[in-house]
Length: 347
Image 1 (cartoon, helix red, strand yellow):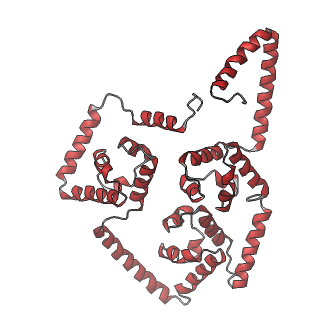
Image 2 (cartoon, rainbow, N blue to C red):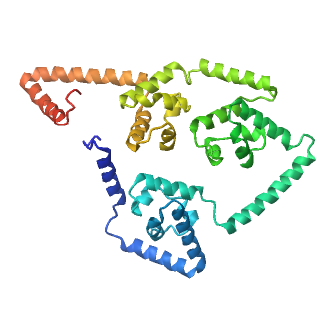
């Protein structure tokens, strides 16, 4: 942007070109890749199974045309493919962001072949059996804890995720209090707002508030606490609106706040996935919003920088006036001409 490349598409092209660029000394890397291929060939049919697994995953999302490029780049197993990044996939010839995003998500969500899954299932079954035995030997039993978890989720209006959370191993309130956004994503909860509600509900829960009336009280308490606290206050929401206005994206303010991004701190963690859920369909718009929040700094630091810049501009004006009017005009005219060329003279 500083270099004058205003269009997002042009900037993306330039970045892709540099990321994909490799120096001429390729002989070493080629010999390494050849030795890797030879060693992989000597390992027998297992690698073929792995590469077919990669093809299978890509076929499931209609991306099998990129299988050769990915395997050729050294990603011969599904385990290796889980570490794929946008930069790697650009190198493999996957130019579109949407396609790269699909491939990365597909490999991260892939849980292995039927053989490995059957082994893991048998292990998990034995573990769950031992857990059941342990829980049955206890006086209270596991069902009491699970009911409490259900109660907590009901209080936050998130009871539909109860089974997924229990299935992931969060069978006690103590474990529930340690839930993170990463854990809840693994449970299939894609929306940031929902994850935030669940985490808050467990954090605010205390054993005394076990009855339904207690849960409603705690809900009221959390609401009042949120309203009292600076997080999610009108001031914060106005700041969010101000940031979005700065990039002509104020129309998305309500949907972003509704999804739980009601503070600047939370908005700084916005991802493309979160903004898609907020109804921001275009990549360029999402990129603008993410960049705007990441570049945002509190009003105090801005006022300091403004006062500094004003001081500098005043000293420059004095220096310019001492040199004479003609020099000042010569300095400003090229800037104005440049801005006129791109119809930005108002700045």
